Figure 1 (cartoon, rainbow, N blue to C red):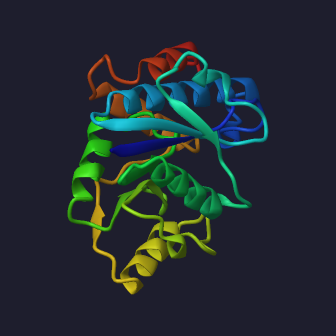
Figure 2 (spheres, rainbow, N blue to C red):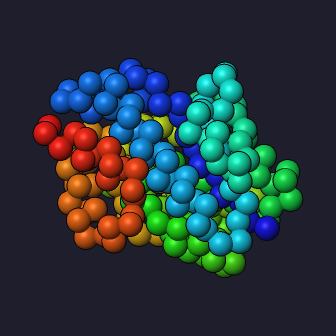
Length: 219
């Protein structure tokens, strides 16, 4: 079976999407992040032939946005940095007898179910699949086995994440597949780009994000 894991955070004001402040308040930024995560989780539930998991940050119980989604199993992110958290998430997926695993973040609500399905399909031939992000990182990574070397001492949250990961994979002799490039919503310019992107997508896409944006349309 396949495993699709969504990395999520609790939408706590002052803890998420702070680079949107200003013009947004911490409360508004948290509300926007919550809408992004809700849309990504709903999109994940539409992926065919996959067990859906949410890996949540923090020491507390799963975020409230998981309470009404009983079809999504959850576990806590474990590790001192993102690299270790990704390693442990892959280990969890494979321990559950899944043969392929895809991990996505919750910062790009426009991600479609088809993207994850393409990643699973690509793993039939590739050893690793990456979804490049415009900021130099990646919004998706997919593997058929845990490969810790891909995650140790990566300069996380920099524009070098993707290039360093690709270099590691090449040095390991892995067969690589790249998906279409997307963008995360980390700052106000990204948000403006998202608004324009949503105009070209079906009105039924990203409903929670559309609703949240409508409430802040005066900004």
